[in-house]
Image (cartoon, rainbow, N blue to C red):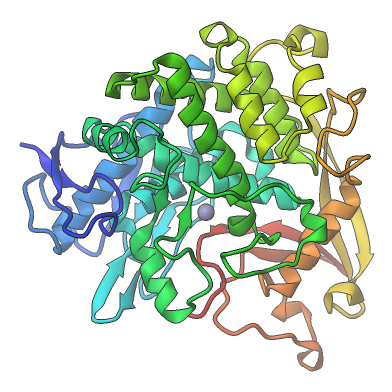
Amino acid sequence: MPVLAWEDDPASVSNPQPIQRPVPDLNKGPFSFTLQAPTVPLPPPDIYDVGTLNFRIWAASEAARRGADFWTGIFQGAGIGGKSWQPGAPLPIILDEGLDLNAFYDRQALNFFHGAEGDQTVFSGESPDVVCHELGHAVLDAARPELFDAQFPETAAFHESFGDMSAILSALQLPSIRDVLLATTNNQIDRASRVSRLAEQLGDAIRLQAPDAVDRDCLRNAANSFVYEDPQNLPSDAPASSISSEPHNFSRIFTGAFLNALAGMLLVRNTTPTADDLVRVSDDFATILIRGVLAAPVLPDYYSQVALQILNASQAVNNGAYTPILRGAFVKREILTVDAAVTTIPHQHSAMGMAAGATAASSVTVAAHAGERFGLRGKRVIIDVQHGYRPFAAAPAVRVGTATPPVHAEAATAFVEDLFRRGRVDAEAHQSPADRIVHPHVKTTHYLEADGNDLRVLRRRFDCNFGRPR
Ligand SMILES: [Zn+2]
């Protein structure tokens, strides 16, 4: 008995029809789940009507299983097949925690909500785009837990980009989506499509309340033309039409490079590609990506570091045939200079003292600031600062427009200042009422752990609402 599921976001086309899929086994390891829904016991697998809770339970389960099966295969190929969820398996999927246009990953569960859109109700856990984005946070946390509390704008933004890449790659696991994508883009898959457009339904709902907070036709579109800028020189927030240092906004630069790369790799594989070519190229990209993520040191200039390691990892896949395409994507997005993209690659892992598939080491120091800087009078604010080993120290500027990489502590401090500006730090308990700065409706992502007069800034969750009214 199959179940019904959405291929991608239910608002990606005007009259979506669910498809039949095999019953997902949530218990399958290493990436296993438990589903928590407002009904006990869970309904048996069956064909349920769209719009019912029972349909949503199986649609969310199918999307999570599809994404987790994809990443399980990629982890095995990269030699880290034994890894499981950072908080341990199984990972709860909490289908509906109440009224909110939101979804988040908090190292305890994948959390989903519902919200009103006009006379409709939007369930964030019903969209495979949103489920596989949140899943992406959990997958990246399994591979590189250091990134969870790395206080750099580029690591936070990369986490969001990885979520969006996970959503796109998980959608491409469906043969029907691959056929549609090739047909509607004339094999040029970095054109705007139902696949490049992410979380259309949530985007529609947020747009009604905050018209400039999201793209015209979705939450975020991977078919974009944004190029890299140093996040320390960007405003902490901006409309969706321009780039800011806000992680979801800034993530679009890397996701754009990803979609350009995937499109180019497809044509390297076959100038008249088939759906089979597309699934193989998705596997190849994800394998290169996860190897790059493992090897990339956690540094303030993380985009360029992970890009260089992706180029490096690409040498070992398909005889290096994808490297020039990947170079092109990162150079076009100004994530890498032309010089760095050419002269630092190829680099053998052994030359960097690392075995292939090994994880780049990092240490943590702290930056301490007078609390007044963040509105915390009489306190000291402690920020953990990741120090990855920089394997390309001898390279010229790897980023366009910068002669020297950003200083770790400065980048971490700028990131935390941004968090306070956006009201993302739960600081109220540590402030006198006279000093409070209030951001109504904003969900916090970080908290302060008190040790005497010291307050350490720590992450609570990756939150996918934009801190917009709801
Ligand atoms: Zn996210």
